[in-house]
Image (cartoon, rainbow, N blue to C red):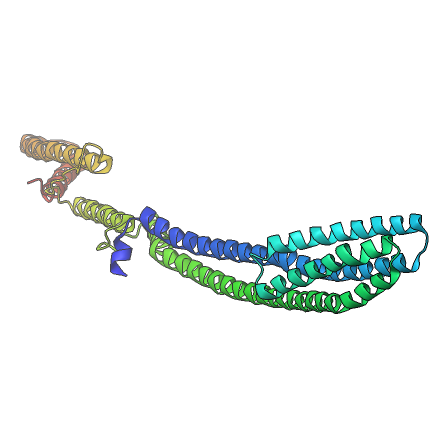
Length: 366
């Protein structure tokens, strides 16, 4: 924790926001992965399982249609009608070929048992052979008995194909249902992880805000409050955090140096007020206007007091000479009242000179 406090503020902010960004990247990454897997599952459901269900059901339906068309051809004695039914039978057969081609293309990605699909292909081929090589030629040649016999013989093959198609359609539906359930589980797990990481990101963000507030905002607010106290004249202030190696520590050290300098100047001002001009004021730099002004003021006061001390001595000497010269003159004055008044004025002048001498002599210059 101490090492973190000593880091520069910009590094603290970068570290805090960096971790928050990492959490956000994790949330986004999990969301992307979940959406990708969900999309793949939906594609698998739609393009494989549901398509298989539809095609197997269509294959079964077309086989039934084949049987119906063959039955109608056997019952019809109209050659044009038989030709029309044969063309419909060929169309249905082509549709079945297309269905089987689609199923064969998907069987590579299809989890359904491939042996069943192979059995379906074999049974269908057998049914088609009986239809194309026995039933239809017999009908077209008018050999209805042979056609009916072959038709009855193909019933077992038809039922086998229909059963296999139904089984495979049921398996495709089951796989589709299972894929849907897996997708739901995947979404729930993704939502759970997203919630956990989002909650962790929120908690860590709150902790970062609280830590940054305590590490940066609190000291800055404390310094602002102490600066307000200094503006009101209070100088007995000391800011902590000097031992920190970041900008807050630098600010605290600079602030304490400032208050110490102000206290030093205030002490010098107290000495000057007490008549002590012996303090030497050293400006910390050429920009230290307050210390420079104090130094100039102190030197001016020293010069002024020196002149006053010299003047006080001269006043006292002159007053003594005047008193000596005028003492006999006052005695011989005919107007005694004026003589006493003149003498009292000289005495007061002498007293003022003595007081001035005492006052200026109490000031220490060296």
